[in-house]
Image (cartoon, rainbow, N blue to C red):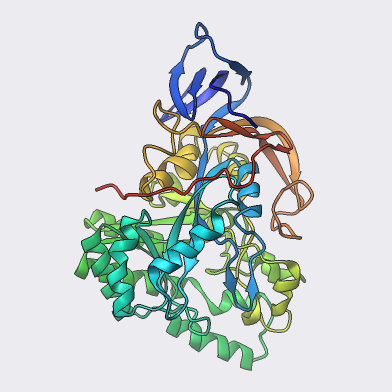
Length: 460
């Protein structure tokens, strides 16, 4: 739709920093111009937000769009994925681009930019995933950082998929990032332990979905996290552990920060809502992800870590594979593409299971999904808040609506829902991206390709 020059969003409960205040927001072109009691200001358009909670647009720094993995390709691409994101109140995504062996790291970045340009409905950034740490790759890291993509992912497992980076190469990468202003993101699972566990279980005939969790117990994650913390203690630099699902790993990361190391972690929405019991169902392969879903005790500890700031943010790790693709693991759990579709569900689930159950305040929810991701990944102060000067990425959230989460009530591309039948309270009513109304109830008003590439710079 055509942008209105000035918009006043009136009378909502504004979540600003650590406060919740009833007031107005004035949008001028693409920016937030003012907040407070603005009833005397004339605007081209006034939108009544009475009864609604007004949040900064969410930032999801962990999505896998059009991702080729385990002989499958994720269903969400830069168009369908960002459309579902918008319906979930997500106005910024950071997608991964995996380097192919022999490929220039700059080309890896350009590949994703070409894929998203002209297709994305919301603003977007790129993490490059290093898989081939050749001298050329190492030399290109500063160029990629200068191009606005200062965060790099490495996998500590998935040898057969060509993703594994061993500790000596991780150390070299971390050293270059330390000197270039970048940050290392790690998929922290110990490959040696996994490669010992999986063949043993298969030889014992333990092939069902639940044995995926057995093959990757918390100790697998903890060993890799310990190795990474030891590496940072020797080399320095910034480390971010993605999709944390281990309470002991969480405690190690908290202690590392106390010791003065720049080490942080996220968890994902599915670890806070679902448990490993899902994988005992006849269709349990749907819930195979890595690290695996854990038990209820560990889940409770992850909630505690969120409340105590041991975990900095909550992402989705959206990796949406079709039910047909998931069935590759019917006979053997290790053949199932790992991942759960989740780009749309994070905000309503954190409200329903967090705010309403007194696990989170509104300011903490906004911090987890918007402020902290923007600050951690080089988007602050442009993204992540309702403060004047920020992009007018604004979510109007109705906390009273009760609905059933399902494939039919969501807008994601997968033909199954990880939360099928779950009763949820609270739903997105409207979403603005840079001052443009892109979601209005069940209507998506955004034009394909309106999303912009975000040049990111990490703060000192």
